[in-house]
Image 1 (cartoon, rainbow, N blue to C red):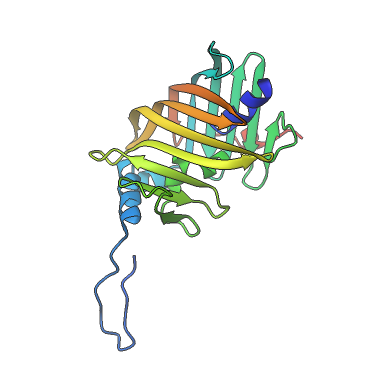
Image 2: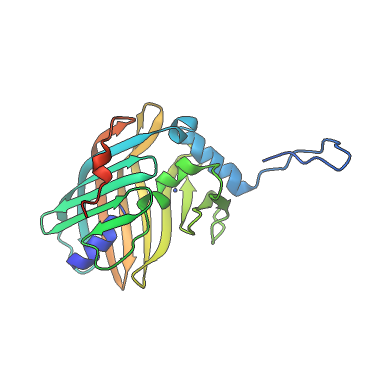
Length: 239
């Protein structure tokens, strides 16, 4: 059980005009529905303020249950993002977990021998990379009417579903392999807060399905800091 929790919690915690040969201006390329929705979501979460965000620090509580054990396991979490670097900590008594990405390498403790996907390549942090080279916008596999898929250059993807009125992400899901096991995850956001014009989720529920077991986690952020000072030492693995 501890092994499954460690794997799952670490992942918690992603137009130009056309000119003819005669240089005669043509009608500009019409954006596809997924591209239109992706831009709407990007703007709804802060737009250029989101893109220019240099650091993000979030901490709070997380309660974890599973299909094998209904009793909630209380834990604390800390997530720190600084450019391409990040640090994730989970402290739940017997469940201790740390994952660090220094911009090049991912180090996980305990590692269990796995190389895990960087958490800034799945989920809401992908939106900060909207418009960047290599981050593609396509339809979701099910072609949801109010959704789009955003993929990273490494091939990790997240399917976003938007609130029709606000354009904010109301849920998102992804699927990837960890140590030969397929992990699928679904997140539903209950509450957002505005920090310096950037819309950050402060309460959300996440479900993981891995190896025939389902894990449920409810995250509540108690402190959020945008563009604060972050020490480089946080991203040293100590190995």
